[in-house]
Image 1 (cartoon, rainbow, N blue to C red):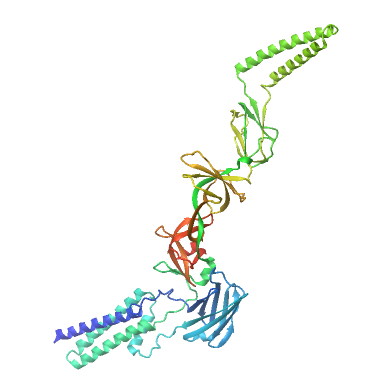
Image 2 (cartoon, one colour; image 1 turned 45 degrees about the vertical axis):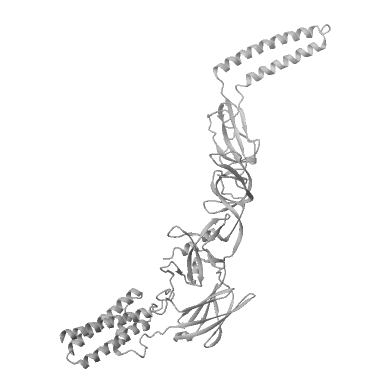
Length: 556
């Protein structure tokens, strides 16, 4: 008899455990289909509605209804709009408290129930009507009419607990089942000699288990927080309240499929414009000497013809001996010619006038040669600026020996730069191109030509920079996005929209709902300096985040 009674007790406990767990799982969505995951354990009641022009989110907090109004495609706040709300107490006009944020006092929000609301919106020349149903949950966890005293007591116990997630719910369910199991064992052991009493206890315990599980699953109401917090779901989707979207400055665009010219990315560097660049070189070997005022400093503006440095020629001992011998020969020739000219002048009546003039010219030439020979080793060479611009490079140091053809100064025009890129294959390029610097700044380029000879197994391709930028410098590296004659079809997005996912795949964030963002894996190709082309992973007609995506990706 004892074995049979304990068998009955064990069966009762197992039935109660199964019934409680099934009831919990049914209310969690396993038997009624999988609903979307809850956005927050303490989120305020809210509704959202949208049209082709507007997107509206209304949040109930106390007796106030806070309304956020944005444009549907761009997610920009709609300012100075007129919003009228048709609710249970008639039509009322919402007041503006900031850009795109409106409030309405609604005392009926303090009562639980479902309210059908209609929002009449007028902004500039656009008018629309949006409708939605706002559900205010019951704030009394003990208002159910089908709870027994024991069920109410147990409900109070686990309602006081702070656990809010599914794990805590499962733990509480098993706790209730175990309590019911031991209750069944105890009652059965007490009345095991009375079969009718045992059956009564069994029926009572089963009923209590079902009621407790139902009460737990349907009547626990969690408190509402003063502020909604952004969070990330297990599937990577994000819940971002409108308040957070305003802080992050989230903006979107509406995607569309189109055909664009193909492009190719080339590694390049900034070079000076050849027509406005000049080198200052020494033609002879000598010692550098500063001109009056000193050597020009880096960044100093100079004009064509300005003297930048002096080169004192360096002469060797053999050259000095040769010059001295030439000087003595010239002195001897000058002396002979002077005496001949004197004799001609004494006998002017006998000698022809032409002979006298020839002697005078020859004497003058010898004297000039002698003067130049005396001056040549001592006269410094003046290095002048061939073009106007600024000093970009300088190798001038007082007393330095300059070799012939050595570059002493480089002069460039800071407003005229080119870009030289390297290509490993010959391709037909169009006239327009873009350059992207390391700070993502874009430069407008114009194709100038390609070289015919390889340079380090690559073909040099040159572009002129059409946009002026004072921060550019010669030798700066950049990426050139050149347009080719090939055509590609896809969706154009700003480069700021493309992020790197945890697995290394490129992702974008789709604004799927008013406060929900979903990551989408995409495959992209370069399009121009500011945009990329999405060739797979995304359909047209989607709202994709273009501003604030990097900040969204930081939400955990």
